[in-house]
Length: 444
Image 1 (cartoon, rainbow, N blue to C red):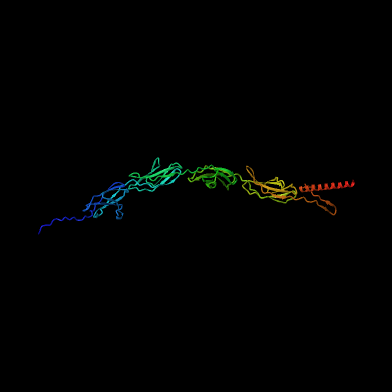
Image 2: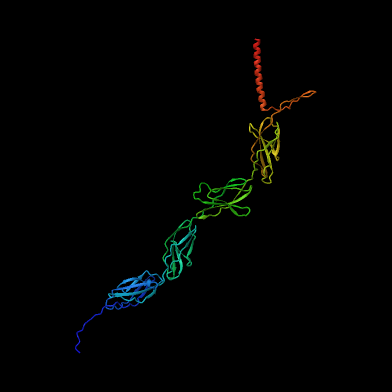
C-alpha cells in the first residue's frame, strides 16, 4: 500500500447546548427568592441566552418567562408568602435552544398577614361596632387584630372579625385603622377609617297643662317652631290595663287629649327622638279633669197662655252622675231684655202668674247640677218668645126681668191702651177749644 496522504482537518457543525440541570432555588424571604443554575455544555457554540420560567401550579400552560439573559442567577421578587413555586431553565446558542431543565420546586415561607380592607361600622352615641373581612394569612393563622385609635391601640381577644369600641364620647370624630397579627408578626394597617359617634338622643321636655275641661286636657311641652323636627311621643297611663298608651306622636309642641272622664286624675309622660334615637321618658306628671256642667236644654215650650198667666215646660236634663239637677227659669219683657228669676226648683213644668196682658215676653231655662262642692250651672237654653192675651171688651146682657150690666174685673191697662187714652184726650181737648172760640165769636 502506498503512503498516507496529508491530514485534512475538518470541524463538525455546532449543536444546541446540553439540557441544563435543575435550577437551585433559595428563599431569602417570604417574597424574595434567588434562582441559579449551572452552565451546560455548549456543544461547539457559545451560549448566548438563558430563559427562566416560573409557575405556581406546575402546569405547562401556567409557565411564564421571568428572565432572559446571559446570567445564570436571577432574583425573583414580589412572591406570595407560603406559596409553592416551580422553576425551569433553558439555554441557547447559535444552533438553537436546549431542552428544558428538570423542574425545581420550593415553597415561600410564611409571613405576616395581608392588609385588612376598609372596615364597616355602626355608630351609636357611646360606641362603635366595627367589622371587616379576614385578610390573607400568608401561611400562618391570624391570632388577633390590633385597632389603632390614634392615642392608643386596642387588641382583640381572638381572630373574630368584629369588635365594639365602648366608652366613647358622643358626637365625636374618630380615626381608626385595623391590622391582623399572626406568629410571624403584624401585617399592614387597613386604610384610615374616619367615623363619628352619633349624638345623644334629646332629653325629655317639661310637660305642663294649659287647659282643663271635664272631658279634655290641653298639654304643652315647648314654644315656637320645631326647626330640628324633633319627634315627640306622649303617653297616658291606662287605668284599666295599668300600662302607658300613646296618645300623640309628632313634631308639635302641644296636644289636646279628648274623651276623658270628669273629675279624674290622669298620668302622663313624654319622650323626644331624633336621628340618634329616642331619649328617656320624662318623670310622670299628673293632671286632673274638672267637674262637668249639665248639658244645655232646648228652648222651653209655652202653653195655656192667658192674659196674666201661662205654663212653661222643658225636657229633663240628661243625667251625668248621681248628682241631682234643678232648674232656674228666667223671664224678660221683650222690649228691655232684662231677665229676672221667676222659678228655681226640680220641676220641669211651672205656671207663671202676674203677667201683663197684651205684652211680649222671653223665657229661658238653665239646668243646675248640685254637687258636694256647690251648685254648678250650665248654659241657658235658647229663649222662647210668647205674648199674653189682650183684655176682653166690656159686655152688656139684658134679661126679661132686669137689665144687669156686667163689668169685667178691673185690671191694669196695657201700654197700647194707655197710649190710645192719651191720644183721645188730646183730640177731645182740641175740639173743646174750637167750640169755645166759636161761642166767643158769636157773643161779641
